[in-house]
Image (cartoon, rainbow over all chains, first blue to last red; front, side, top):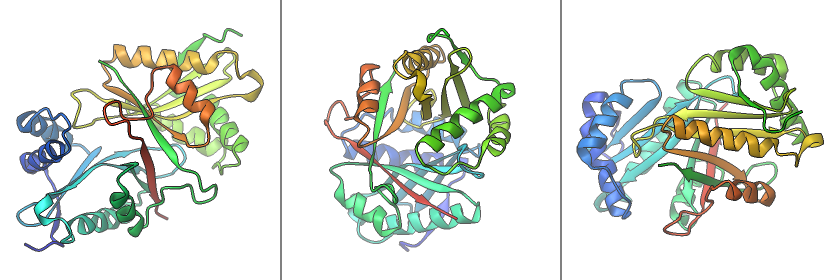
Length: 154
Length: 154
């Protein structure tokens, strides 16, 4: 396995992306709709320019899923990193870093204005990981954090 | 003025949305590209189903701007509330609440899975406002906050 091997996933790789995302939620004790449902959703999502997925490792042991969206404050799109996961057995081997570096390189090439991510407050390892890759958890001028709020509708 | 008067903005109202968003950033000492540029961007953005804007008050004194995006964990879209602003002179008159209630009603009608927003950590008034309208700043099961991280590319 080459940790630095990262590929952009096509709709044909939806099942591989789905399996890794399902493993992610299973590991975190978070509900998952299951691999077949995720595969069906990802097959549709990856056929558009609104969703991007990357696979890391060969065979794939890590995944990143992003949404591209317009933002009125920027001339070019913003990417939101919805999920980043590396299988526990191969953690620390550089797959996560290779995924992030590839995402940032592709974002720069696509003239993306910013890459955003939400990180759980207690997950200081993830916070350090993103800070190492240049992300800021506090607004550079004000030094203030921003909190994520959500309301789920049923 | 009727505070409860809220309308979904069409591309023809882009200049009105732009003026309020520009006022928002001016009040917060945040850089704005200016009303003409914002109007041009919003005219294009509001012609798609990816961006939604609402105007509150008649004439409009408040604005909300949202992005609709797919999320693999849900069968239906997620709305991200990028900006919510009410002019200081009419704050406390219910325009913000009317905007949020209309957004949540439209989101329910459109079978939106969740509405998300980022709130600055020191802005406890905004946090209380969203909590009053049913938003959670901590994950209901774990009780944990999530922090916003970003990397701006140039």
